[in-house]
Image (tube, rainbow, N blue to C red):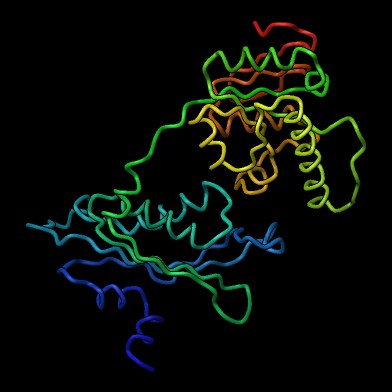
Amino acid sequence: MTDDIRLAFAHPAERAEASSTTPCDRISLRDYVVEVEIGAFQQERGHRQRVRFNVVVEVAPQRGEIDDDVDRILSYDRVTEAIGAELGAERINLLETLAARVAERILREPQAQRVFVRIEKLDRGPFALGVEIVRGRGEVARAGQDHVAVPHPQVVFLSNAAIASPHLPAWIDQLVAAGLPLILTVGAADLPAPQTPVAMAQRRIDLLAIEQNAWVLAGRDRRCMVVGTRTELDWAMKNGQTCVWAPSKIVLDAVDGPSASPRDAAALAAWFAGQMQAADLLVIGAEAPAADVPVRSLPADVARLA
């Protein structure tokens, strides 16, 4: 085995030492195993699997005496906290995504200069499947320069009577004129959905029924764009696009998902409004659900949204 091949499978600490061009100190986290739901394949949903982390952080050498003071060094806890924070933020499909987010979070620490992150799935077969990335402080800083804060949107839930209302275009006019990013939400159409005794399958069916109705709403007004991912929602809010929320991906990828069933669409909209840190939730044609944001309710025959 050549030295290059050996290093390719060596621990990140050895790889870091081999590739370093300047003197540095290193801290490492070895064989840190957690159980988490992760993966892009359908068979990985609803099941937890073991994931192993090996992380090496290069830090600038300390100048002067440390004086045995933990506040002067990068604590190992900051590395495990970075992993926990990213695993707790949302359900992640790709190890590559998780590795990049963990590296970025670690590099926010003032002492961190470069980080090696190796992540491996341990339960996908009689082997370990994984990725390894290297990120430097300058790369993350450049990537963060284009960050723009997303404003708090107005989330509106429309009942089926509201979707069919002749007032719908005028309502959208009024909501757009208010100046806040606008996200519309709906429930399923008033049609019987397929039924199955398998809870996970039924949840998918009910979410897809909502998405079908989202397309019905989009067909009523060309300003409405059906959107299913947080990235698309963020882009749309920054660029003044009116969205209709397709809930499947965000609901299924949520680590701490909604307690509301997709059949309780207004409650699902309230959960979504909380996730988006909405300015408020407006419910048209249904009872106002409990929510973590301000809520108001109007009948489906109202002409103006006071």
